[in-house]
Length: 265
Image 1 (spheres, one colour):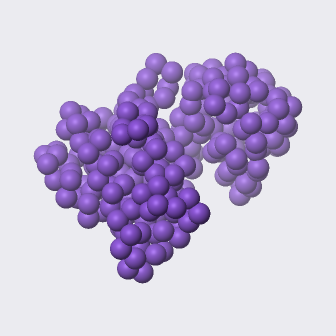
Image 2: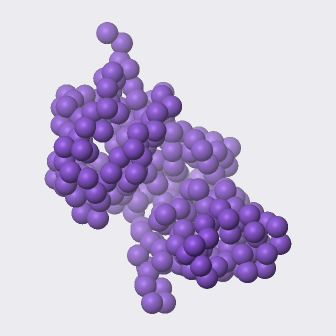
């Protein structure tokens, strides 16, 4: 029987599947609830490539998170799916997006590439000579989300909640702030400008130390990259190696592009 492979982008609220399904999942749910959803996602497939945030044991497919999926801490993804012998490959979601970009127009022309992902959280990954830099557990080698900043950490200021904070209201969504900024609202535009200045200042030493040539932005907030680009360009002009600055080639499919590469499809 031919192998049928499913690509899964596992988040805290949904699992996005390459067959078009988007399956709700409660990462704070019970073990049985989580296992049921994973079984549903794998139903009818004999192998999978899975993008999932850390902490996670990417070599053995074991959940190591405590801030979410805590009910399945220490358990194997394949066992929870009821597929202990299935061929499943795992990759950190940010590394996955970068892996995909290494085959796409905005990333494949450069040997030293960095990726920032902006959404509910803040992610960062780098590749040197087509090899993604990873920690011993398979996560990105360097984390920037938890860099101390002002009265908290960098992610508090560069993320969904960071932009809402910069705008001065938790009642207005980032999408609405972006729409207002594009319509000429000065306060909304400044929220994106401030965010761009903060992230640029934080990563300049990394870009310089690793002689990064291309800096890409992914994640939902990167749909508003044009609002951040002027401030980013101005701040990052002091990085002599940097030759390209822009969003990922396809925000909607960036993670799946990486999963296809991982699965050899």
